[in-house]
Image (cartoon, rainbow, N blue to C red; front, side):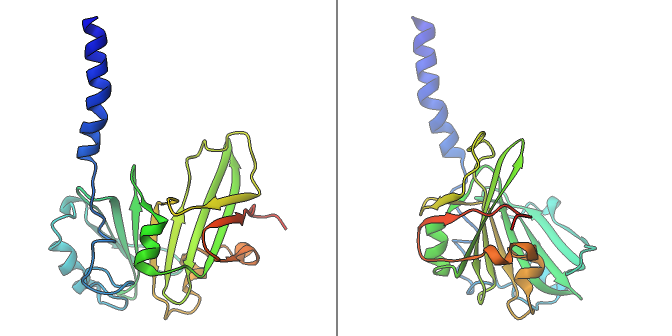
Length: 224
C-alpha cells in the first residue's frame, strides 16, 4: 500500500518538477532589439570582430562553448557556434563569408517553438516544401520559406511517427513544431538555394505556395 502511494506521488510530482525546469524563454521570440533577420543587433554584413564582441557579452550563452573557426563550405568560410543556457533554443551559429555575416541559425533539442508563434513574429511564409525519406522508418521534413525576408523554418516530426507508412500528404497545424530557424542574407543572390531551405535543386519543382494551415503534398527526393 505504501509503495503504491509513493509511486502515485512520483507520477504526479516528476512531471511538475520537469516542467518547472524546462526553459521557457526563446531567444528568437524575446528579441526586440531589431527587426529580423537581425538578432540582438547582429546584422547581415557585420564584421566578424564586432560579432565576437556582442557574443562575448551575452549572459545566456555558455561562453566555454563559444567557438570561432574556419568553415570550409562552398558558400561561407567562417563561423561562430555556441550553446545557450536555460533557453528554448539549444544552440546557435553565425555564418560568415570574407569576415562578414551572411547567416544566423538557431537549433533546438528537446524543445521547440510552435509555427503559429513564429508566424505571429515573421508573418506568413511564402513557400512550403515537404520531403520524405526511408531510413529504417519514414523520415519527414517540412520547410517554411520567406524568400524576400531570408528566413527558413524547419520542422521534423518524431522519427517513429510513421514507422510503416509512406504518406503523400501532411497536415500543417498552428502547433506544428519548429526545430530550426535560419536567417540568410536576402541580398545574396540565390541565398536560399545555396545554404537555405532550397539547397537541393532537385526539390525546386516541388515547392508549394503557402495558403495557410492545412494539408500539403509530400515529395520524395530523387523522384520525378
